[in-house]
Amino acid sequence: MNIWIKLLFLIITIIVCSYLFPIKSHSEISQREEQQTEAPKEKSITITVTAYSSTPDQTDGNPFITASGIRVRDGIIAANFLAFGTRVRFPELYEDKIFTVEDRMSNEYEHRVDIWFPTRYEALQFGVRKTLMKILSSLIRVQ
View 1 (spheres, rainbow, N blue to C red):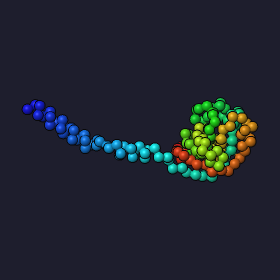
View 2 (cartoon, one colour):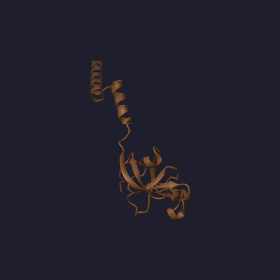
View 3 (spheres, rainbow, N blue to C red):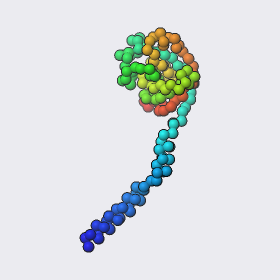
View 4 (cartoon, rainbow, N blue to C red):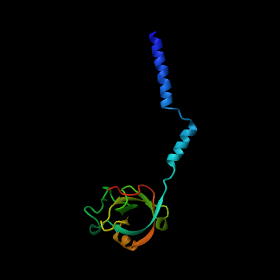
């Protein structure tokens, strides 16, 4: 009798588990993976873009460390209205190159983006430009 109770318990457990955790077919799994790998929708805005370099008069503290705590490198931008890690493109200036927000600007520049350049000369050559920016991820900074 004891074995029949164990067998009944096992059958009930299998039925409950199959109800709670149904086995998905290969096509269902593939569809889910495709949905997860779809590119996020881009948001486009026209924005003023300036440039900066790692000189003490243009930065706070260590000029080679960004506000997010990483070392400066090509592809870093500063923006106060976007969260750290936000990825953007400037298609009119750099086509498909992706930039990442890792730094902040002075508080007086709320809706402006600053691109990091290795030299002050390159930053000055860039100047001030108004251009299209496509935001690829993480829209607004959480304060």
